[in-house]
Length: 286
Image (cartoon, rainbow, N blue to C red; front, side):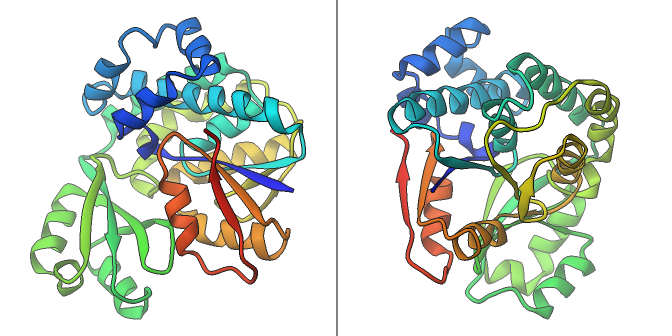
C-alpha cells in the first residue's frame, strides 16, 4: 500500500517547480478548464496581495498530478494532505468536487482580509522541542502551527508578537528562521477567516471518500462527512501534526512507500527527516 501526499501552502511558492508541473497534460487540462493556465506566473507573483488565484492553481495542479500518476499505478493507495493539500486530497477522494473546493478557497481568501496582521514562520532548532521552547511561544503569544519533524516546525502569531520574539528571544536568535507566508495560518488567529467559511462547510454537500484518506490534525482515518467537516475546521484553527501523521502511517498502517505529489519537494524532505520504525521510500509522482 502506498500513501500519496499532497503538499501545503508552500506548493505555490516555487514558481520553477510549478511551471515544470504545467508540462503535464492533466495539469494543463484542469488549469485551462478553470481559467488559471495563461497567467500562472502572474498569479504566483501576486500571491500575497491576491492569494485566491495562486491557491486555486496550486490545488488544481496537485489534482492534475494525482490524475496523471494514478493512471500508471491502479487504485491501491491512501491519500494524505498537509494544510492546503487536504483540499486536493478531498477532491481526489471524491468527497467534494472541484467547483466546491474553488468556492471554499475564494471564501477563505476573502476572510484573510479580516485576519489580524501576522505570519507563519519556519523554525529549525538545533535540538528537539522542549519545555523551554513551548514556554517561549507562550511568553510571546505564539502558536505551534505545524509539527513537521523533530527539529522543524512552523509557528504563527501576530506581527507585533513575532517581531518582539525575533528581537528578544534567545531561542529565535539561536534558530534558523524563514518566513513562509504573511498570514498566521493554522492558529486561533484565523477565526475571522473561518467564520466566512463555516456556513459554507455546513451547507455544501460532501460524500464519504471513495479512497481511504487520513487526517493530519488528529492522525487517523477519515470516513464520515461530519468528521471531515470538523477536520477542516481544526485544520484552519489548530495545529497540523504532520510528523505524527507520517509516523502513524508508517508505524501503524505499515506503509513503506510514500509518493510526493508536490510539485515542490517539501514533504519528501520532511519525510527523510522523520524517524520511523522501519525504512520507507519517498518518491516524486513526476
